[in-house]
Length: 452
Ligand code: LMR
Image (cartoon, rainbow, N blue to C red):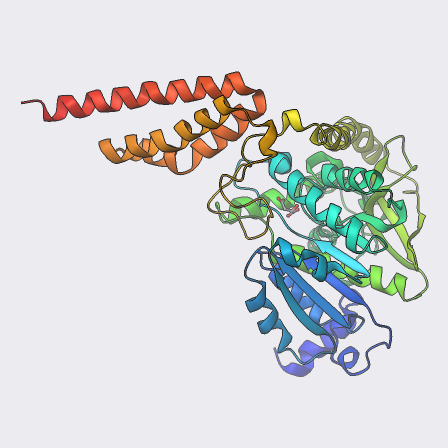
């Protein structure tokens, strides 16, 4: 494609208007600081680049536990308005956040094939909580765009954190569901044979499986699609994230399209903050449009964030059924987040160790392996059990040179430790005893191998 064609394609897309060459030349005067938390990760890097292209941004703050100096140096060479700074490690989180107007959170771990977004809950909940505590402290008035999954639970967790710090303003907290809208537009355009950049489709509910409800009956331009086609489009939109997870075959979930969607939504928030009228996007926000406390629907954005949560208009019978069907799951995901936050304040159920995985994408203040929790609440027996769980499988694997135990030692034991310590000290000790039992078997095998 020639440069002229590319330029005109970008101009035609209202969604991508801020990326146009003309926009680079005439940035709006307002100073806007945007912080990306998790900027060195799979979503964070392309998202940082896209935010660097946004002329409304004057200061771009890129935070992660590591890797951000490089990402910031790289992105800073792009000749657009904003000044870019990288911040690495928890010590620099405050400086990264201070003065931010908008904080985007793509931090956390991605899904692997076979996992649901909810399977990420235990790990990402902790990450989101500590990041939101820092937001409450350093930039309590910022708008927060939550990308970390499961969004249906992480948004309620963020709300609870802000409430507990006395800074909650429901107008400023958003779950980013724009990728569902982007997917619905793309898939619909393919079926209706229209230009994807001319399509609009509201998507309501939440951001996981059947809680994602695209309203194709309200799609524009309208097309005469059959009921079967609408069903297939709905299912594909609901499974869009899984489609990418499976195609990436263990290498994570959507990063590029999520970065694009995150940048579109951030652009809408900045426009609202800058007083641009009639900015409307779908988002998962505190809501009264249904009986659920959080719900994704069209939202009008303004100088303080949410100006108005809009209803979803007339639904087809198929969409009405979808709406009823999604409520149970969405309700329980919201409650799970709220309950988790309430329990996280109780030190007794804090685990001995945070879960870790060597393949995590960067970002988590919790990532360092074996990070002790509130040390005063960890009993000696739990400490001894945890040391056994760590060292015994490694020695066993080393002694017997068996691949299975090696893997166990490498990864699963950490997870086993985490989950058994969650269940309580007894479970942790039982796991430790089982591990010792396996070690004895390993030593016996070894003895049999070398017995004269
Ligand atoms: C998506 O919709 O692609 C994201 O929420 C990532 C995921 O795990 O599906």
